[in-house]
Image 1 (cartoon, rainbow, N blue to C red):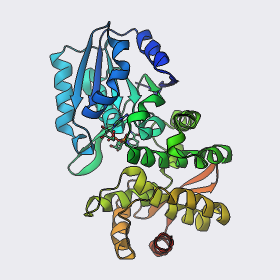
Image 2 (image 1 turned 120 degrees about the vertical axis):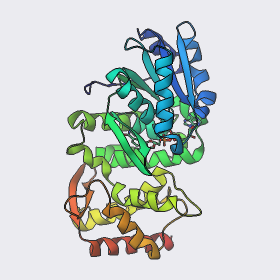
Image 3 (image 1 turned 180 degrees about the horizontal axis):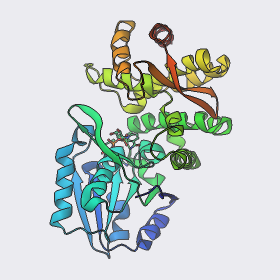
Length: 353
Ligand SMILES: NC(=O)c1ccc[n+]([C@@H]2O[C@H](COP(=O)([O-])OP(=O)(O)OC[C@H]3O[C@@H](n4cnc5c(N)ncnc54)[C@H](O)[C@@H]3O)[C@@H](O)[C@H]2O)c1
């Protein structure tokens, strides 16, 4: 399937219901995890009540984003006689859309699906862009492909039941995207608390539209799309490090908040970002830091994780850095000594906050 996905906004339950009723597919196969089944499915149940619908519930969380769960979904497609004229509906966060999208890509060499994201992270980021995957052999997203949803429907009403920790972690990606989108988007998003989003859904829609704009220009992640990795070289290393920490693991967005602090610092030294702006942005991202925070003794571990980062070429560690709000550089190679120093400075600043 090519990158023809559309983003549809549903601001009320009624709009969501009318949208779902307007789809002219045979049957619906709704994939949810046990939490989104309990909290979110009731909000779409009436829209599906008068058409054939099969529901498949998987356990929640990243540890189930694996081949066993994927095979369970494929077996269910087969036993239900699911066909290309039917529609898979992924009702959940990034875990559900990643695994459901991959099942859709594989079954009968590709069937249509839509995403109904229920977390902030998925509304702003994961549900758009056609990257589908499961974790394998202890490595995140090792098995996957690009397979684009027909539509992604963003309905902020799902956020009412999202745990606060998930909401806050998701807001880090919203803020990162606002920084990349430009000064106006950043000014709006940085002044808001995540709890105010339901009354200010435009912030979510703007983040989603921004992601889709980038994806449309670079669907297969060959160049421009890499700007979205701002904060992620250090952030992914922190996320991996936290998996082994007794107080961990951190949620993705929590790790990216620390990654943003380090990479804003690197943006000043290596991309010419204005220092006073970096200071202000650092204050905003600092609000989303959560323990465990690495200490200086962990820096060598973090560097080791970064050496394995997928953006690296020719053994150097590469970054996407911010020049100014709305402008970023990709593929910036930074030597390990400079990186060590930036990490030391970042961790000192956090310690003294
Ligand atoms: N494909 C992409 O481009 C992309 C981008 C970013 C992240 N991801 C992937 O997304 C995954 C993380 O996704 P996530 O942060 O959305 O988390 P998630 O899907 O794991 O959901 C987090 C938790 O919130 C619960 N939940 C979801 N919506 C709820 C709601 N409305 N009310 C109550 N509980 C709810 C879930 O059951 C789960 O327990 C990771 O696997 C990551 O690799 C993919």
